[in-house]
Image 1 (cartoon, one colour):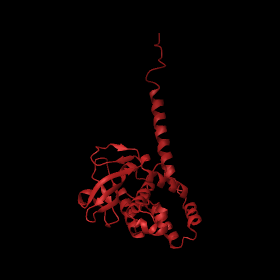
Image 2 (tube, one colour):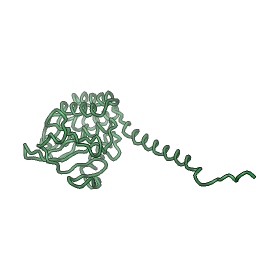
Image 3 (tube, rainbow, N blue to C red):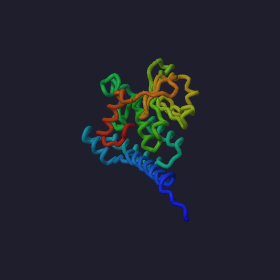
Image 4 (cartoon, rainbow, N blue to C red):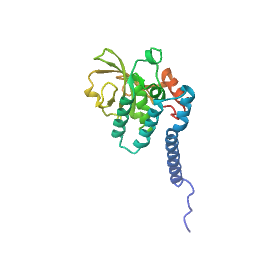
Length: 233
């Protein structure tokens, strides 16, 4: 007599594994497609509707688009250098009180490029979103609020972590080159954030929800209105 075939137990696992991989693949493709959907023709049109004739600013926005299109296949280290160099050259440092008549205003990359100027937050924000668009995951990037000890004032930089335990690299508008945090003794970390959460020094990796960071949420809303698909950042 032939043994009775089993119709339960381990047999469904290959199917479940396949479904699991398919779901993960679709999730990855879905997230990537959100960030890939930046139509600069629409973005420029929206900017012209808001500001009128853009003049030289249109060229800056087009150069930004060209940077994105030409940098997609670069290694991450070269993406960091290209993006850091681009915004440090394209933007002049000007306080928010002079540009926006506000003490603290977080500009979108379009707002900064239209003005051709920004403060430290605007450099960091523009670099963050450009690197996100170039495929660097948010967990590797943190917009970091620091105290600039040489100037005795608040400052903001972008930090990059090659791995969770790696020493971060600092992208700063104050200096042209990217240096590891150990070589930036002039900066004292206060807090950092990205799409994953809000981080405090000495919190052992614990993070808080950025939904409580109102300026970040306002920034995301402005970018969506400008035509950028940025998800939660």
